[in-house]
Image (tube, rainbow, N blue to C red; front, side, top):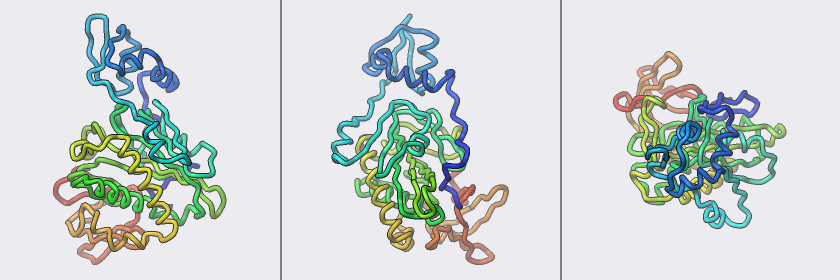
Length: 331
């Protein structure tokens, strides 16, 4: 089985450790009247514990004597609006603080399609065990879970289909400069603005629970030293709200997954060049300690990357690999 699809049977990635004893303490703080007051712009009595909580949530703050105030209080998601847009049949679960929306989605018993959204993840994950880092209420962290009538082995190209669908949907909303880096990094002006992590849990030999986790940089983005590549935020190119981006993302995931289950990658293979950030460019593919250089010419029906090298046309499957232009992006 190929990455970036991970089976639920694997050991979960180590949680990002906050300066607190338990995730539950942080979640309880997010539900407290003190935190509610901070979100409204009020100042609260300063304490070492309060500073630890606020810093663990990635929130900037300043001190006024014995009082603590958030520099720019975040605006929480309007889940009521989102549920209304999704319709009466939509199942949307909202939490302020979790370790991972993907983990919750994998563990939750379900039959239909459900969405899990959080303001903050203490252990958000990306491909190859990388961390997804985002301050409270600044960006978008969600997971869409569904049960499909497919085997795990037949889902190898799903992440490409989801990425393609997200780029299509964002472009339809006039977000300029959006493209896709194989296999599924969404770029804005050549810098990462969203990532996708798909995890699966076999129900039967021909029926699988699929969880599509998506993180979108909306209001902020991590520094290159933290994630190892240049990043940016979609808010630099669009005034779309987090709620609207969530709606676009959820619908794109549902639509793309249904299309993939019925038709595989056939509908997008020839159109891949429309979204490919490095189409016909000279690229380097890093595979462990090895480097393959050549011209990126697209994908095949298995979702494998095609590179024209000095030895001829070669194809590469997904896994612990890193694609970059020969000159420019550092990852």
